[in-house]
Image (cartoon, rainbow, N blue to C red; front, side, top):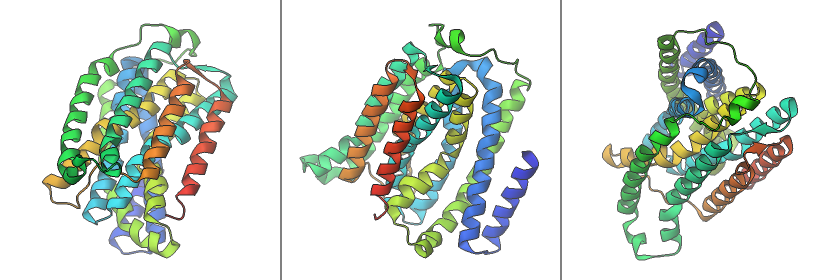
Length: 346
C-alpha cells in the first residue's frame, strides 16, 4: 500500500506541476486521495482497541476532514463559493446516506443485524441532529426574509463562533468510553494492536499532511474538468468534492462495518457530520472573512436545506433503536442517489 500510494502521490504532483491534461490530473489526485484514505483506515484500526470508539471516531474524523478543509480553502481562493456551500452539505449527506448506508449494507450482509451501542447511538444522533439544524438557522432567516437577512455575514460569524464553542463542550462526552457493554457483547474478538502508539499517530499525521498537497492539486484540476465535462457547480460540490474530501471516512467506516466492528464504524461515520457542522463549516466562514477569501456565509439554497434536514431525520430514525440492517442501508444509499440526481442539472 505504501509503495503504490507513494507512486500515485508523485504522479499526481507531476500531473499538477507539469501541466498534464486536467482530466488525467483530476483522476490521479482522486486516486491518490483514496489510497491515503485506505492507509488512514489501517492506522485507525491500530488505535481502536486502545482509545475506544468515541475517541477514535473524533481523532479519525478530525484528520479525515482535513482534505476537505484544504479543498474548500483552495476553492474559496478560486472564487468557487457555490461549490464550497454544496460541498459542506454534500459531505454531511454523503456520510449520513451513502457511507452510513454502505456500512449498514456491507455489515448487515456479512454479519446480520448489527448493534450500534444504544447509549452512545442515541447521544451521537441527538448531537448530530441539533448541530446540523443549528447550522441551517442563517438559511432560514434569509429565505424567510427576517431582519437578520440584512446582516448575513455578521450573523454567520456569530453562529460559527457559537458552533465552535458547542464542539468544545461536546468533546468530554465524545472522548468517554461507552460503559453499556453492548459492543463488547456483539463484536468479534480483536487482535492485539501491533503498532506502537507513537507510530500509529505519526502515520495519521503524515497522511493528513500528504492529503493537504493532494487536495491542492485536486482543486486545480477540478474547475477545468467541470468545464470540459459540463458538470454544474452544485453537482461538483455536492457529490464529487464531498465524496473526494471525505474519502477517508468513506473507506474507514465501510471497512470497520465489514469486519463486524459496527460501533466503531457508526462512531467514525457520524462524528464526521458533527464535525462538519460544528467545526469545518464555522472554520471556513471565519477563514474566509479573516484572510480575505471569497466570502462564505451559512446561507444555503432552499433545496439544500430541505434535503439536509430530511436526511438527518431519516438517519436518526434508523439509528435510534441502536441496531442496523442491510435493508436500512440500501434505503439510505437509494435516497442519496435520488438527491444526487436532483442536482445533476444544477
